[in-house]
Amino acid sequence: VMWLLASLFTAVAGTCFDHGSFSQEHWPFCQELQSGMMYMYFGPSADGDFMKLGLHVDSHSGWSALAVGGNGGMKGAQQFVVRQEGGQWIAEERYSADYVKPELQETQEIVLMFADEVNGSTSWGVLLPTRSCLAGERYAMEDVGMFMHWALGYSHDFSYHKSRGQFHTNLVGGPPAAAPDMSSFPSSTMTMPDVLVEHQGEGDSRNPYLCGIFDLAEVLPSGLNSSDKHHVAKFAPVLATASAKYVHHMILFECSDEAAAANNLTHQQVIYDCERMLMGCQTSKWPWAVGGEDLILPDDVGIPVGNGARFYALQVHYYNPTEDTGVRDSSGVRMTLSPALRTHDAETFGIAGGVDPRQRQPLAPGQSNLVIDSAVVPAACTQWDVDEINVLGVMHHAHLVGKRLKVEVTRNGEYIGEMRREKVYDFNHQSLEGSAVKKLKKGDELTLTCSYDTSSKTTETKFGDFTQDEMCLAYFLHYPAQTPRRAVFLRANGKQRVTLCPQGTVGAGPAEFGLTASPQQLLSLATFSEAPELNAPSCTPRGDVRSEAAIALMRGMGLDIPSSMSNARLIPLQCAAFVALIWYF
Image (cartoon, rainbow, N blue to C red; front, side):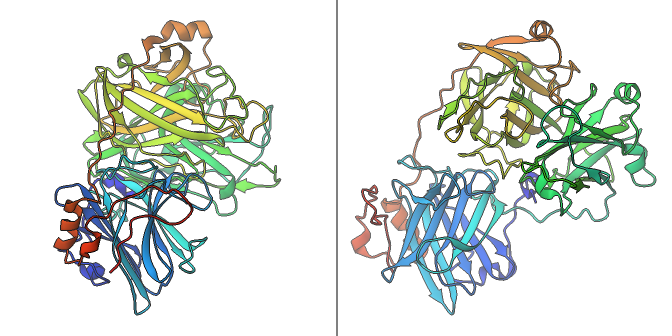
């Protein structure tokens, strides 16, 4: 569950510190990873230069690992593996660019502070720099919620894991707070009415798009009126067990009264082949894709529904590559409503860098890192009613050959930073994740850059709705809600960018991005700007595990550092032999 949006972090008390060689005096935080048997200990040093990371596992003998990742999968994960080799404990930094055995980092910046197996249980602690600039793929240790992973091996030979898991935490701020108790809150469920998953018109039978229409007056609990404004405190995907593997993404749209009347919308109506959404049903309330989790809003923030808007459309994209027949589905979304209105409305903002073949040329095959022209949200499109907005999370979306997506922020020509940290995009693990840029200001410019790996392709890949097509799309959730709610890339000419930032409903297609108007009409409404210079500052290291400061920190924790190690240095990997810095106790 995406507790990171609750934005409150607390240390776990009680029995958490009763395991292994960990004390609250030296380890700021403890997080239970598996009930009663696995705990992670972590936190920055007092000066913020180092990160302490430890693990205790009951009833385990063999290698064990923790990892920092940009999503819930192995792609792009920086891993810290502790195991025995030749009877000695060692710590390794590894990195996985794909679902293959993680490779040793080109350089190693990790110190094994201690490790032991006692009474059938394993405990270890490592020291890391807060920011490394040496060769390799690493995440800076920042005050932002991120995915982490754990894994356990069958033996001390590093090979395929016997078990693994994933979780969220903030390595600087601490573990997420306990989930708020919403058991007494009213809720509404919108699920597809046991639909037959099939394609009925022209298009691709492997990629059916179905829309379920829901009358809020029918799904709200007794006593609640659809004409009143309500705040959703939590969205949770509902995935039908038998058909979940076919569900690629779901988006809940709010329909205007005019759209409902013009299309004679009725409760539980099903519209087939709805990859082009109905005109007027294009206000996104909840986007979800494969790998997404529950969305929980902060206590003073809610996503508004109702307030006169009665009909909602749940667009479900199914991916059925083997064209199985007879598939039926009842997936959808459960909305938990706040008992009282909250202070702030939240809203999603979509950056459509490429969702339609009219926006982009097809991707050439045989390219391992094909970077397309950036999409820009110019300052003219961020002239909000408030001086700044708060960013709750960022979601990247591409399809099967998507490799890397990033949204970077510039302000009056100054580079502010990258919003979400995700080194490698993973189609199977898409979720709304915390943003390193927590506030956007009026007049900020946002640049979305997408890259693709088409090395396995022998033909071009076009942009479009279907899974075998491609997309370049990002959302961010923010409050207070503002307009416009979207920016659509139209074209690039050198450094010039042409962007549509519709204030209202220009049209629909795909979904909410207004591309059915004629090119001349779109250009007449577009903003012309220049792509900003993305002059990211050079890496500044913070924390040197080779330094006297690192040794002093470990001595301060009561660890006996052999004097022979005081002059140890990190060295690069020059051969297959393990040459990472090792501390023996």
